[in-house]
Image 1 (cartoon, rainbow, N blue to C red):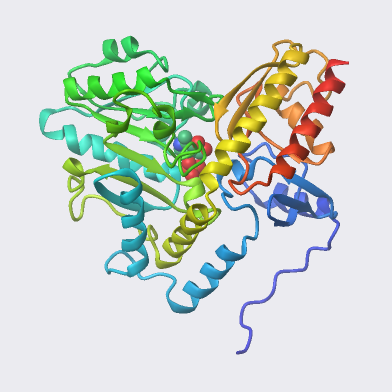
Image 2: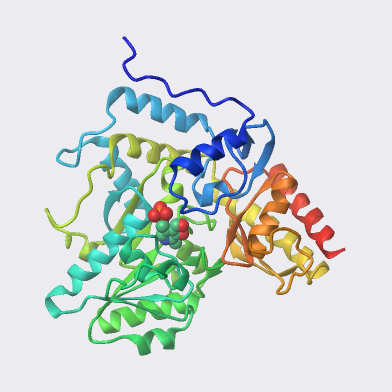
Length: 429
Ligand SMILES: Cc1ncc(COP(=O)(O)O)c(C=O)c1O
């Protein structure tokens, strides 16, 4: 076939500056990017345009569940794209139905709506809450301080961090924040207008803070008592990252009454597509038909291509028992980092998290941290780690996160921990 689209001008290899220049001239500067440009990856390694190899413990912010260039994802993309990429949601197709069934089987009786991102999944939950409370004039969603729920207008109104709201006021009405893990604060905040409560099972951007079992069970009882929906944002902490499919399942393991716990809605994204952009939300059975025909939609959500990839990611995770891997390597990281924190309390203050969602809180006044003082300590440490060939994800000003692929190998986890230990020891010296 004759080529009708002209090829883009070739980017000369080894030219980081050329790529950065393309960005500074043509891309909206809404991200503070690191001085790195990647060309390809394999497993848990990424290669920059100069050919340097990095161990990726950031996993594209908890997205690359199977690492980079996993052959099963390539195969699913190729096979499905040969058959059917997109149809619109005017029609039925098998991959969406099968992925919905698989997710329902993993969570509990209910139904799934597919979309394209975490922010869009949360928007769906907000609309569910409004529809639920509408006839009684209830519309408010209570969320928590330090939460993060996406960058849409309702997402920033729901988020419990002022920095995402600044400059975009007035906020969408109907969202209020209370302290996390504080049941009394939530109870006191409920007003006649409240329709739902939304929390993350493990706060991610807010610094990797898990909900306590008492909080989860208490919120469930509170929502039942006050006739509110209990909604959970599992965009970052879901999809086996905690060592169970959902973080609440991990948090409530062995806790009396824990097995019976179910929220009323769950948003998902990130690892769901293993890098292919997709989101979804699950709604518990009694409310699963609230969003009736014509009330909510999206052009691309749940396309045959996205769902074929989602099914493949799930199949590999289950076949290779990656939830056990997440649990084991999570314990390995936490134990090693906790030892480091004991040895160097002037560098690491605390280590927390579950499975392969680990947060390292830096000591306050970490004066020895070199680098650009206009950058946060977390960013400066990330840059020091880049120099040693390790990628991590900053959260807030003084926390770095490890959110690696769920199929990270033990030897790679050790390599990452060794680099962290060497950099921390250098800072403490
Ligand atoms: C807990 C949580 N909710 C929602 C979002 C937004 O997801 P997305 O960036 O896919 O819109 C994120 C993204 O980091 C997140 O961590």
